[in-house]
Structures are given as C-alpha cells and as structure tokens.
Image (cartoon, rainbow, N blue to C red; front, side, top):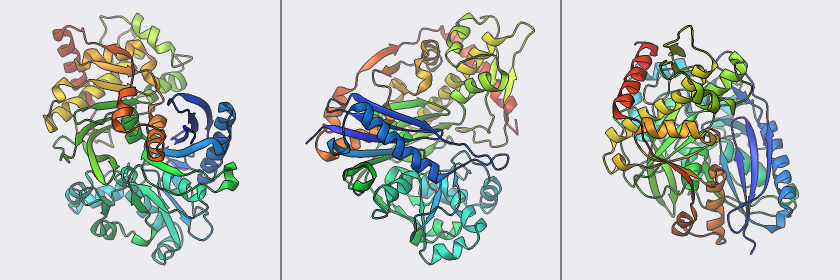
Length: 497
C-alpha cells in the first residue's frame, strides 16, 4: 500500500490540503482563502458551501502538486477550526444558515444569564470548559432559537449539528457518515469529558435535541470512505482532531508534562496531563488532548485570542509596517530604554482572565515611541501572555512543569527575535521543529498510523526533529521588572481593574 496520506486542514481564514509521502515529508500543497462575514459588531460567520468548495479545490491542487492521483492515497485525515457551528438538513445536506465561527460573541448575554443561574460550575465540572461565547453549545442554542422552525425540525430529527469536521465528513461520504471525534466534541459545552458521552443535563439546559448530535469516535478510527465521484477514488477517512489537538499530536507531545504552543491568529498552549483530568483553579480549560484505542489523554489548555492578529493590526489598522516579516528587524532596533506594553484585548482577554469586556490598550508611550517600539510591544505581548499561561499551568499541575520545554509552531515562530524573547520571558527553553506543518502532520499521522503505513506513537515521536532551541539568557532582575510592568498593564486593562 502507498504511504501517501492526505491532510485537510480547514482553518479560520483559509483551507489547506497537504499530501505527505511515506517518509512524512510534504509532497504537495494547496491553499485557498475564503470570505469572513461580519453581519453585526462582534458577529463572525462563514458560508459552509464556500468552505466545502475550498476543500474540494485545495485537495485537487495538492494532488496535482504532488503529482499523484487520489487512488495513490492510503488514507485521509482532517483537522479543523474548533467550536465553529454548522447545522444542515439531514435529507438534503443544505446548511440552514451560515456557520457561526468560534470568534463570534453574539451569545455573550446568554452566557451571562446562565452564569446568573449559577450553572457555570456544572458546565465546568462536566465539560472542563467555562461559560463563554467561544464554545459551540450556546451558538447552537442561538441558532435553534433564531432560525425559523429550526427547533421543531431538530426535535423531529430533520437537522444535523456538527463542528466543521462533521460537516466535511458528511459531505465527503455523501451523507453516509455522521460522526465527530472526541477532541472536537470536548469543545462543545455538551460533552462530558469524564464519561466520554453527550450529557443529557447540559443538552436540556441548552435545549438541544440529542437526535441532531453526531456519533463520537476516537481520533484514529474509521470515519467513513470518501465518495469516489468527488476525487476519483474511494479514500478511507481514518483520522480527525481539532486543530490545536492535532498540533499537539504533530509535535509528538505524547508524554505527560510535554507542552506545545501554536502562534497563529491567536495562541493556544496545551499541556499534556496524561490520564489525569486536572481541574484548573486558575481559569484554564480542561480538555481532551486525544483519544486513541479507547484511552483518553487529557490536557490543560490556555487560549489567547490575539497573537499574530496584533501584528496584522500594525499592518492593516495602523499602516506602520508593510508586512509581518518587518516586525523582527524593527523589534531589534527598538529603544531598550522604553518599556512599551501592548495589551491586545481587541476582542477581550482569554485565559487566564476571561474578560470579554476588556479592550486593547498601550502603556508607556513617549514622544520617541515609533514603529520599532510598537512592533516590539506587539511581539512581546504574545510572550507575556504565554508566560501567564505557563504560570497558571504550573499552579494547577505540579508534575514536572518546572522543567517544561515548550515546542512551538505557527507563523510567528519564524521570527527568531520573538522566539528568543519568548524563551527569555518564560525562563524556559523553546524548541522550534524542522517541520512547521504540525497541525496537518498531526491529522495525517492519525490517519497514516491507523492505515498501517506510518509508525506508531513511539516511532512517530522518534521522527520529530528540532530546527533550533532558544535558551533563556535574560538577567533575572530584568525579567522580573518586565513581568511586573506587564502585570500592571493587564490590571489596568481589565474591565474591573
């Protein structure tokens, strides 16, 4: 059997398809952006049909780029933007409205109402999550309440709910498979992560009929077979994981205590806690890292809403840089005597603060502050926020996190200056891998290992290679002063600060 494996990486702003060869090297790629829809302030939507079209076209691109046919693929894996909600007709497969994206804040008042009913403790106990518009459950509840006739149709079993992975699998299999994996299910506010089952109590609170929910499988499992009419061959779908969990797998963070952080539009750090389902006392999320062969591995997760998006703001909002790559050189030239702090709470603050009402602020500006100082502040903001997450994780879980080496991926890790400053402010080593396509690689490994053409966990871990390690060398007094300044800036930014 061929060792080629296809990964579909369906992200927030674009869809990518990547073909990996038998040596787990990239053989071909395709990428396509799609429309971001903003119906109102704080609302974010995607057209599911446009997402579907982007998947089909990028897979064809990747196959052409690799010089192979669909019949040469041993398996297909899917990774996806998490928490984004699609509802479609079971009979026709047509979505009943646009997808509501994970960034969407329309259910903030609904979440506040549930908190006033003292229900957050129950949701957190069962799901490991907090009540925030970020997650899928309140989005689904909103859709059932606001799309005409949706709730009655859902109760009759006429409608299907899914995160993006479920919707794509449904389409790829011609409606034969209505499934998801444990990682995506764990982000819905409806899935009991201790019992690994949809939770009837939570479904009742959110008024979601169980009939519209997909079957939940392991991350490496038989999710169905692609209709041969779509790509020209029947391809088994054998791996699925939400994007941050797929990156954790792609970074081979299989041992408890291993930690990865992905720096894209936002930043998401996951710490593997093994079979230990750690209940955070520091506003982190308890989530499923992966489920293989029926065994669940848990993680602590910290979610930062704005990472690379702060650099995009410098480029598109302020117009002080022409490209993101310029920030590295600008940060190096910044005046070291100026301590400028950017708290990028453009859409509120994520973990460990979870302050949806906070808004961005800049502190420490002088008449001499310019593009260099603002660039440095934007890059440092990501590092400071990561330090906040690491501190919270160390408080929650004492099992060796003091010696954590952070494995990093995402677009921002190409900046050597940022990675060095990250190591300095964490006071911990930062490892950048040779293969930066870790999210797609994680999905591909799930599928390839299940197909028997790629190695098992131990064999895959042995293939992980480091491009560069960044060791901390900042003076402790300098680090302490910088961290004190950051904490002060955050305190002044919080809505109740």
